[in-house]
View: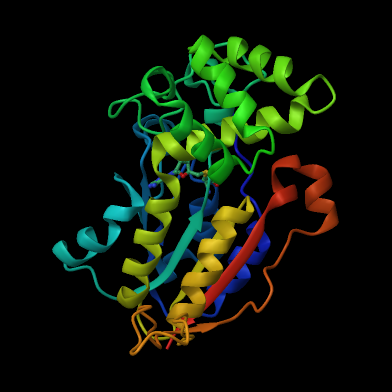
Length: 299
Ligand SMILES: C[S@@+](CC[C@H](N)C(=O)[O-])C[C@H]1O[C@@H](n2cnc3c(N)ncnc32)[C@H](O)[C@@H]1O
């Protein structure tokens, strides 16, 4: 199974303009973007590829050029890793969020409502509870909040009620249950939202992103760049807000006696509006359709 790196041309262009140094691919996956960077720039960068999923590193991390090293970790651990390993001269960091085709298509991972399998949904199958285990013990009110907040699903309440009644532990029972609540016409959209919500919850994806973005930006060298490709509005909202905070915008309300929002002036935003893939890429690669790319430069 191959994964076509999204907006590869744009990514290569963004990092052509940075000083030589270390390039961190914070979501290595099957190594698509790292390969593009390595091929485009040769020895300009030493690439460190990290991924939370050891299975992806085992598949994508074999037979790599000598300038690419990989390591398993969560990207929220990157700031501590960089500081503890005394890594300097970081001139590029890329986050390509979400999951890759190999994970989505693997039935045993339970990420897709179209494939039968257990509802696992962990990026790292060696640690933490599966989605099924969480579903088995989460209260109806917590489920409603999760489905609303992370899935933006209008029928969150009715779906949560059905989940608590049936406590499904495989993808097809879950899909059937969702269809039973929303009907066949709204099924595909709702199922995508519910599966997205559960995946975000299981992997604490939004907390991961906030911690990584705010922690990594100060560690990038002047002139270096930080780029993020996101695939839904919750991710993009976090990236947009963190970039604004890091470019000095204050988010405190008028009632605040002094600034508490954590703004700092360390980045110059290079994308007022996010970049999106060319029509041709969207046609060729359906996964690219929802991609939004924002990047900023360390000042
Ligand atoms: C869209 S894929 C990246 C694909 C990659 N750019 C390529 O071209 O092959 C996202 C990857 O990020 C990983 N991932 C998701 N959350 C993570 C986290 N918090 N820390 C590290 N890796 C994470 C997933 O396991 C997945 O392999």
